[in-house]
Image 1 (cartoon, rainbow, N blue to C red):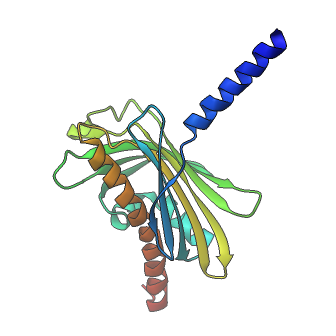
Image 2: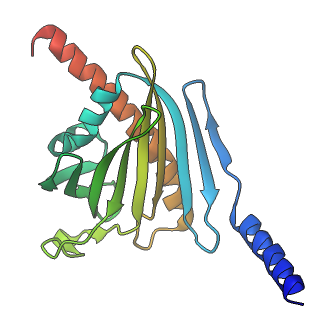
Length: 209
């Protein structure tokens, strides 16, 4: 009887796991970028993942991501950044976002470098809490669901394979379809911003600026 009960429980567990594992849906399939979304069971938000190829090196890409105070110059909609703490592998920052027609958002994020066994490098991020930066600061809406990672592989002397994954909720009373559309459009913009900044640094180095 115990063996039969255990077998039934294993089957039910398998069915539950299968139901929870939604398939990735292809949203974009270009030569240099593929974009996917996946519904999270029981939630209205979706995971977003992209695979892209950009010009550069791992060292340059990581440098862009940790050049924290200059992110308002590099990334669309980021209007203000404060670096609260920095160690050899991680940094903690406060960031505010200016998006047209809606209330400004802000978020606190811890970002860390991970050197993987296959030679790739990941930059992970997750939210944290700081009493000096409460929700509602300067009238902003706090984004509390915001985590993901970058992963870079050097696939050529000057070519990077990039995997970008994020799960986030822009918060507030925006309709779900607007939140989903915003996430789908923000991911490609963010990846190409890294590509463009590497190119700008190289051009500046050539001209001696």
